[in-house]
Image 1 (spheres, chains in turn blue, cyan):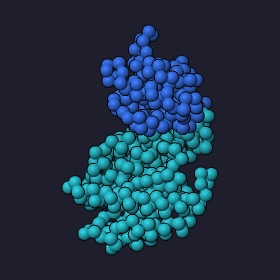
Image 2 (cartoon, chains in turn green, purple; image 1 turned 90 degrees about the vertical axis):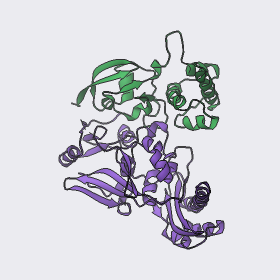
Image 3 (cartoon, rainbow over the protein chains, first blue to last red; image 1 turned 60 degrees about the vertical axis):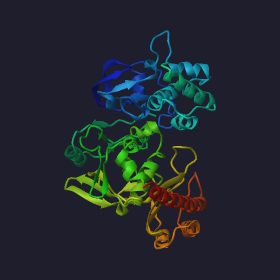
Image 4 (cartoon, rainbow over the protein chains, first blue to last red; image 1 turned 60 degrees about the horizontal axis):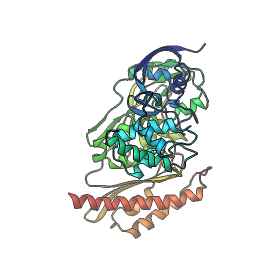
Length: 161
Length: 291
């Protein structure tokens, strides 16, 4: 029998209390018991960045955290970005308008990485954007559309998005 | 790609951790998780017990004391990156940490975790060698200090007992102004370096008074290039001096792996140590101009 623990985690502003197997990763906890499948799992060893989420406002790879470690913390996932069912986040709008995605697999990780980056660097250079997304792999776009989207989003967000 | 079964412990004090390590068989400590979690996911690590250090009090701080920077083992790499104290008093560490992984990994990764993982290419390990850091570990008999030169036991294995944990690292500071540089060659930004070089220089009236040249990624542990350091001290800095002194780096015994043959590492060692010294020297000049 594997050990379980009771945890209380806030995800996108909503509090969840669950009993979890201590070896369950945070990524699998979000996708399985919570049904939040927006967070994608690519490599499951911290290389591809697809599972990037925010823990207390800081980006982290959710495949490299245990669910039990999130106890008492605030998690933000891609599901919480859009302000309403009708409206997208300005970063999401910029991705749509600049062809920042094709297959969409890396997109949740790209968005969560860039949300943190643009919060801390509201007026970045192209070079800074490229470094910021260096921990996120995309096999479709060649990154051009993603970089363009990030710079476009920065402008929209400075104007109050 | 799921972690194996283990029992989970989340102690809140250092003595509790030591007590657990003493009694639990086959236990591993979990710090930032940026190396151990992949090893668990891939089942390269199969501990029966996981001792999570993330709730242990008093292990995350950066402070200047007695001519040294003291940094707690659980200090996140992010906090080192954004520390004004590190930037002002230990700029070589700042330059190095920008080359450690990515934002997402530095947000979680810790100093102590990186040192205990002891990857031959790890930037913070090379910085510890360059600055001759002292490492404090707590165990059943209390705390003991290990000079960095005695810290690597063998490949990726620190000289720490199974019932001990790293608590603090003390990095002696170089006087102001000094020259510094951390340069590396990696296949992609944020990858482990194939070879890295750290250089520190102190000059007095145009002559080099003290030098530290460290190579990462060439051998199982960082290599201090004493031969290069000796060739520099007492000399007037020049491009020719740096170039000639760094030729000694071509003779070191280098590793070979899928990333690069030994001969390429030797070549990089000579080139990167020269570049690091040139940059360090230029920065002394820049610091004097601005002061």
